[in-house]
Image (spheres, rainbow, N blue to C red):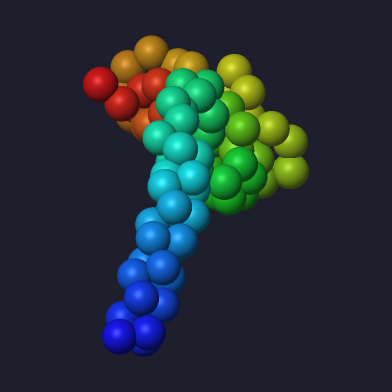
Amino acid sequence: MQKFIWLIVFLILFLAINSKNSSRRDRPINPYSPVRVPYQYVGYCHCPYDLDPRGYECGNRSAYVKNGGLEPVCYFGDFR
């Protein structure tokens, strides 16, 4: 009987701890946060935060900024 009580106490504590951690996952995502790690693709200018072959940020030269053609998803706000 005593083992059963300890099991119930342990389950209650476990659920209480996990309920506190769930609020961190429920936070809204910043729409301007990058979808992937910045500087992951060196040499391809898909997103403004990528690096060109010389090691500079692509910025306004990226496919994300230019009209027509490739439309990469660079930020969480791009998901519709």
